[in-house]
Length: 402
Image 1 (spheres, rainbow, N blue to C red):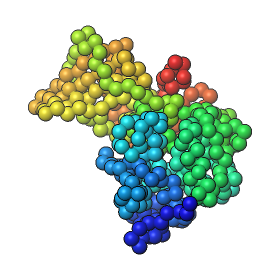
Image 2 (cartoon, rainbow, N blue to C red):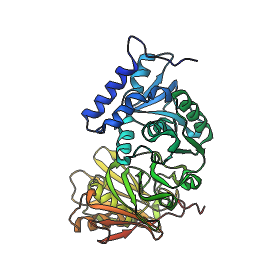
Image 3 (tube, rainbow, N blue to C red):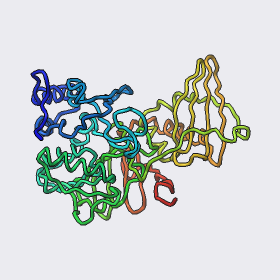
Image 4 (cartoon, helix red, strand yellow):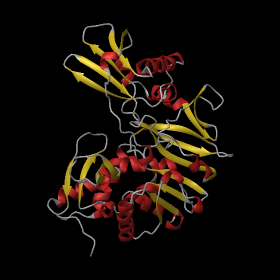
């Protein structure tokens, strides 16, 4: 079957030009090589006929259908929108907007930002963790040569469609169906490792399979939600040192998913107290504070609830549905705020203490922090690897103990 072309006199070239110009004007596309890749690797060949389009940096979204509304479909495909290609691990309808998003064709802006951070060179050997639609594997194949690209996808159904998409687009990287956290030792060492799913615990296998001087980029999301663009450079002795480059939010690696929400069980047994720390300050703190939270208040998820004149910050353990919880309520016109906490951990105390420690260090911005990953674990540090540092605890569920 021939490739489908856009309607109403539009061309692939004009659509791709518009996307590239939009990203360039936003400062998200700066490398001429990746601009050429964006123009030459057709994104429409990796988009399903029906999908849910979600514009980047927006909660809005809607269904697109190539057969019933082709103009809308083409505009969405060549916009800065992610396209949901799987829901509920294949059990749901990806075009419905209902259910958990489990695979997507990521928004071009964030894809290009990570690829520019990766900075691969022609001839490099690249490990791509999370094939999804195959578009990123195609972009990497265009840049370094398809013989050097190894792409791993955990879902067999998604992997099969990616293989078909890549074939249609004229690319044939090495595809593997398996757990991306294990890497691909038989194809190592790699000059570059590119991760397209949220990571809370960084597998040492990636560091071990990267060549000294190699680069690893990933969305590091230690709380399971909004996280950080992380770029690691591999030194020696299975160690990598990295820096942060702004916010990132991807769906998590399947082996590191968090499924819990706020659950105020045993409410009548909760401890109650007052605080003068405004909960909105913690919820909207700088990314530098969020990094300190990862070390000193680990595995704490939260979301805000606003009800008339009350703002509530609700805290929970993302990997423990019946675990500890806390709530801090701020009512309009009051100078003190009500705190309720239950469980083995005092989540409000941990989070607020971590915030105050960040303040005591001078409220450093995220760019002053770095990360070291090695056999002794993962350590966050300030200003220099030998400066103040904190070990990042790892949840037993992330390690797969149960």
